[in-house]
Amino acid sequence: MEIKTRKIINLAAVGMIGAGLASCSSSPAPWTQSDDSPWQSKRDTETQALPSDDAVTESTYSDPVLLADPEPEPIIIAEPEPAPAPEMITPVVVAEAMTPEQEIMDMPGSNYAVQLLATSSADKAEKFKTDNGLDDLKVVATDRGGSMVYVVVDIQPDRASANAAASDLEARTGSKPWVRSVAGLQKIVAQ
Image 1 (cartoon, rainbow, N blue to C red):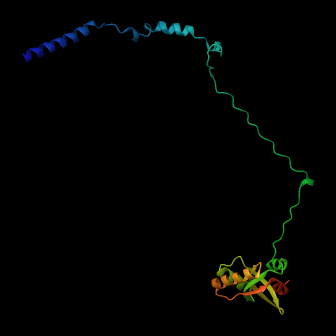
Image 2 (cartoon, rainbow, N blue to C red):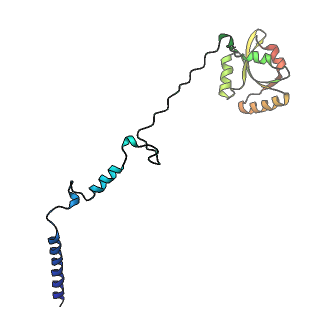
Image 3 (cartoon, one colour):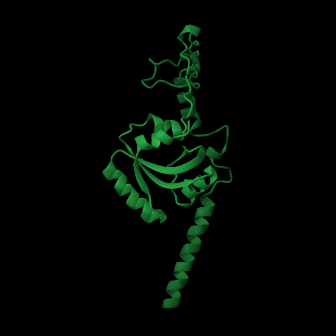
């Protein structure tokens, strides 16, 4: 029974395929023909209904049509400001750097100096500063009885600050500082 049912199903399938092939026309479908498209009449009607490019305006459509890129904005170059008149130019006065000796002479005599080192060589005084990281201290030339002596000093506003700075500098350098008034130092500064 099963064999008969299979044969019947196979025969029915072959018959349907054969009927489908027989119903096909030997001529091509109308939509594959360029001259005889079933949609051609619809295309022609739509083409006739559209206005030409010349007739397109904002009133024809609710949305404006952009047919080309907008013109770029012009580049405006600002003119440079005129140079000031010669009488408007203020001369610039460049102050010369003051020497350490001039700085000491300009200080109030009531300040205090913490003197760390006295040597006959400015180079030795600078090396001492560099070796001990004391770049903020001053090397001041003094005149001691006709001999030039260079002292490394730290300036403080009062005696208490000078004593505290002396303790700190002694711990950092191992040298025993001497606290003196700036007025006393000013008396021996080499001019």
